[in-house]
Image (tube, rainbow, N blue to C red; front, side, top):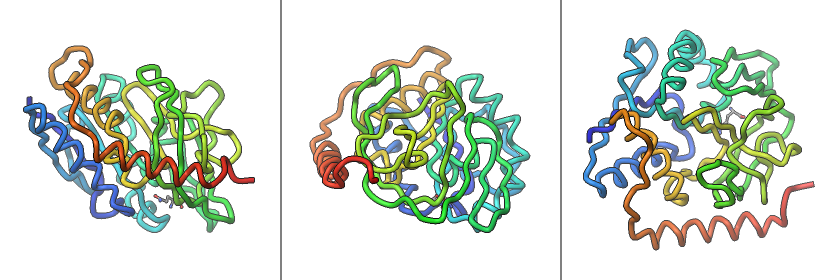
Length: 251
Ligand code: GLN
């Protein structure tokens, strides 16, 4: 299968090696005989978002977020619609914030979000930085661990009843107090976890790939054939141990 990926604003939202997530999806798709066709979607592009099987948006500083917000906001209806129709999506940090209702930066200016994820984000006075370990709350992977790295001023408050990505075992997570991190709507996942995220969480990469393949084939998500993930699992173990050495959530 050809799996079509729309990579939103790669030249603006690309900090902390988040584009490594795309490289992992390419490799894991190819290992199963599929091909990832990745298309950059930047300011002014006029794509038909429903023609992609997965949309991806990375992280960025407040300045870069402000530069793409007008263009992204104009795509809000289309993004909500295609996710409703089963397109998979991964949004990391700055992209995750802007796919909520909005982000109020350190200078008090508010960036209008697209309202895909049921949350609001407000920048705090300090940055939440460090290794993070989560326990997945996804129905498809309850209890599996997710390891990554966070660096954000934004505090993201999920609406009552919103589905997180996971429970915080170590680190700050969405806001440093709720005990949860990330958000899920349909086949769309949002998270603060950089690292990049997917190389050290191979099961999560495969879950996203199975969702994208389901959209490409019009079928239901299928379990992908396992790969020899020794290196990936070692990377996960190292990141998880580093997060745990923070001694649980910060005060
Ligand atoms: N600028 C946003 C914040 O500081 C997002 C940062 C990021 O993408 N790492 O919270």
